[in-house]
Amino acid sequence: MTRIREVHKGMEFLNMQHTNGEANVWKGLVAGLAGGLVASWTMNQFQAAWTRVAEGFEKPHGAQSMQPSEGPNPNELPAHQAGNQQEKEHQDDATVETAKVISKNVFGHELTESEKKPAGAAVHYAFGTATGGLYGAMAEVAPQVTAGAGIPFGAVFWVVADEVTVPALGLAKGPTAYPVSTHVYALASHLVYGLTAELGRRAVRHVL
Image (cartoon, rainbow, N blue to C red; front, side, top):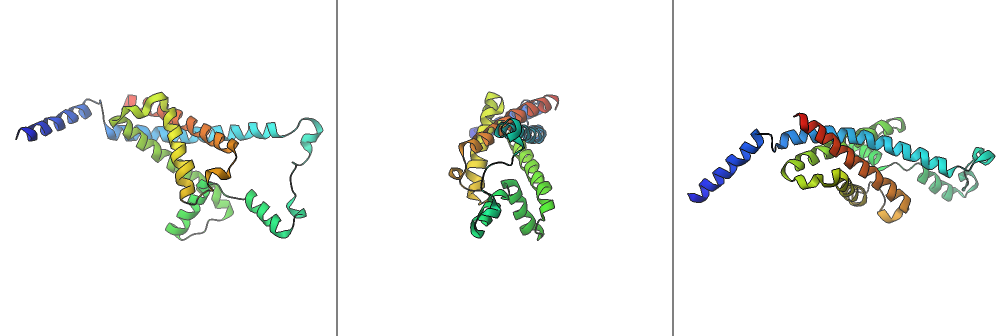
């Protein structure tokens, strides 16, 4: 009976915490969803800016910048090599690959080329928002996950999602198939996501 009373008191204490707003998983979930949505958008903007800067550095100055980039011309390669070259250039990213799988297996529809980009964006925002919601809920029961203003969370998110889960599901090649610059780009993007998700979560949670 003593043990039952202790458990009951413990449950009452947790309920008091939730009532007083000290810890509320549902409010944390809502705050996290909002933070994840904003973070997904910010991550997109960061990646677009990174790409523009990278392209600017890759292009030489002066008249040479008007020349086509160096590299093998698929039209001048043997048929099988040209096919491989074009396949690499048109390889879909992980979000589009995920969208293709969902569309085919759930809706029985093969995505057209014009549908791939919006479908990939939808997957990006859905996954980023859901991850933010999970993060917000966890922050209520284990505040340690918010350490470092969400930046460590972003790093863990990158490792678990990009480096492990996506290749394991066959949605991208293994980590060793990509240059270091690609990993740096992905890591930086997720650090931005983590920081923004935490700032957004804090702001929304403060008013709930």
